Image (tube, rainbow, N blue to C red):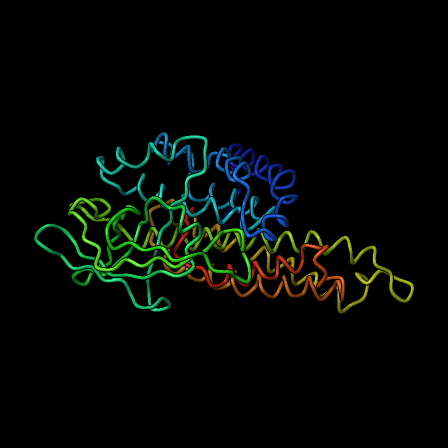
Length: 357
């Protein structure tokens, strides 16, 4: 029997995350979406939650903060605001990859700057065929020359460093690229349908020249698949949290909304949809947790993580749309969060390889 029963520590983390999401993130979500910007104090408060800073301060904390714990926390945070959860998942992906697979020199150079109390942006940029072109790296006498372009990078203008995956001599590697490296260009932020407070923009790396020690792990290299699996598990968790918030908001309404003498929740067409939403959210959660568990055990999670992300992307859109439909015309009104959740669900479904857990 497969069981992912949370440990006492994981339950405590989830309880704290849920309270923070309810009291701090959810009330601020609409204003951040409307202004297309997070207040600095809100980002700092999310940072002080500790998912990133704990790993940056002590890489040995990986054993106390495994992927499964991180995805459970991200799910709870996303119930308050999926955009805020995505904001913290970006630097989490970078820091975790560095803590797990970076060389000692790379850890000493970069991790300490993420250990403070103030939000700091960073991201994993996995450039593939869905971008302008797959990223490529060429080995030179002095290091590497990289060409890549990544669209929809959260907080691109605020990132001091990027972890870029690229093909080099038939193998995919990851490279640490500081923002001030010649050839790195960040375009202006573009308006997006959802996750609007993340100030997404395109980043291009035009024939960027890097030293040999820019490769993650230096001489030994790194396991890029593990980084991407972690990113997909994180996205699955965030989408599960968003779907859960839709269900928790919709269920009480259907029990109180009376049409033709009875609550609409008693009508078969509505009851079956609510039941399907509950089943699908559980499936999203278990698929995500299974992928996270495989990552923590050192197994290949390529299949599980890819399936979790794909299933969650499909189901979160269905659940968000059903939520809007159950509220009728009220679901389209901006006084309620449903239309924002629907837009965020669509935006999450196209992200890949830029966050982590």
